[in-house]
Image (cartoon, rainbow over all chains, first blue to last red; front, side, top):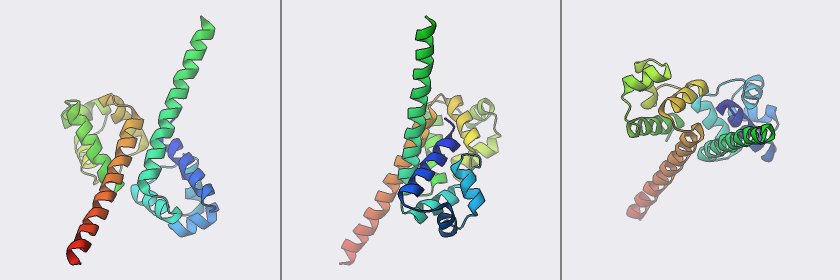
Length: 92
Length: 92
């Protein structure tokens, strides 16, 4: 899983947990709604400054977002590995 | 500590652990030496694609770099908190 997709997923989940709509968060973090939506979908890069603003706006420590993103990538790598393993087992 | 600085520190330490010079890594990861150096100093943003290329070049899983960066930010936030606490203690 690409970093951008993992980070986008984590940001969207945290936003929903914190009960923000895209519009509310875009206003609070000072970013356009369209751009925020693209970040969550993993189709746009995010600057470290904007990531900090979003973290502050949803009141989640920046390190928590980063660490969760790392774990998300790790789990997804394990999943990929397991699928490959399953395919190999079936092939054998 | 800003994300960019934390990530730059982690990347520099991993590069040195893996015994790469800036020049060697810049060639292997397909990035200019100057840009790589600025990334390590935290003065330039890095795209998720380039971060993946660097991770691959130094043979460290991407999630490990991300998680270490998160912990670095966390430790640094704790340090800041502790310094403030120490200052308060002295002030009292």
